[in-house]
Length: 564
Image (spheres, rainbow, N blue to C red):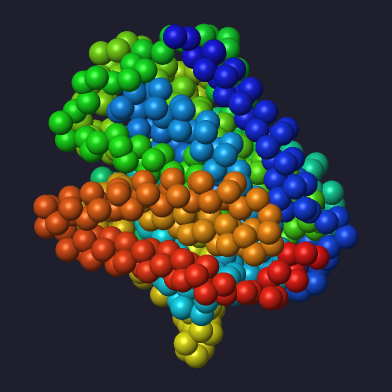
């Protein structure tokens, strides 16, 4: 099997999904209204509620959801073969991620820019808010820990990416200032910023920056984790126009360039896929493909984190409701393309089957070096275009770091919002204090990154991956449950949300039980407790939803808003 054929199949499936299925959702299910006044205008404050050009917002949304997860997940799932991974990415993106991301964005727009957790309170009942907020808090906690560890790992493995990443920040802030304070059209400054960034990638190959292997008894990766969490905490405090939006717009261009080069390298070089379509020699320490495939590949197929971004930040910046299709559905499609690129990089980026087999000789090896496998594999595809391999790998590592960091500070901002909502719910105003909430977010994320794996401080993110993936998908299932109930109340076709909900809820609950059993066997009390608590909260919230249907709970405000 040649890699270019798989790429062509993916492009065709995604194009058809956007052309037909997203149009059906927009016109028949959500009934988008161009005259509806969006929260970005109704509550404009210059910080969180900011009417934003749809291309800029798509860049922010896409880069916020397209972190390292759609790369890590497929790279790990290749241990079962490229066939199951590709099928799940294609079906999940078109029929599950599409309605999930699009739907949560629409629901939030119609409800004053509220988070999906606040919407759950209105649709299901008051207890639903508390349950949802707790689940979301745990998910964001794991997102931040996992992504900080992923970035630290990349900085250690590819020190050439350190310089271009950190110099990207002041470039983005200058662009934000020019665009929002001097009224420059953002496209030209962002293209200039992209050009500067690409030149910095080349400079990074000549000026690699690295820490000593150990400082104060902790490895360099652990220190990078703390630095990135501190950066994320600071960045989450800044107005979205100053850093988040302009940097995300630059990163969107960066991702376009990266994906273009990877796919072009695939079509030019036409490398053969050395990985098996179905791996019949799965290592003994690997978990079963059912149900773990569907949580190992979370982002890139369907991700609960996307609903948090859609209803947490993107809904507060959308100018016109019909643009929700472009931002929401096309954002999930873009991440699907990134996941397919990860599959191609790890399936056809190795020279021989024996090299592939060595990398996937154990579950620990596959999960611990998934990012490195993508960077090396994608770099080999780009090398087919005549670009030196060191430049190609630096470019790929820079791309992964940039998107992981974007997700990190978006997630830390969302986690601060969640703490504020919990504080309002329980009359604890201290949780709404921006300084106190930021410190709590930083400390909790750092604790999880350092103590999830007591034998390897600062590297707990990879141990967390199965739990992160499961919690992420559980959150997606709960968001789909809320969408199902909204559509049911509105007497619209709720089956488009119900079927994905039932599938995701079943697979993730099954996976969580397996994860908890593994943590018990390993004697990891922290992850056993966290996993058990999340499972209980999830089941409880589903039962609350069933109870709302039985008693025909009627969210009048939601119905009025949804009907325009």
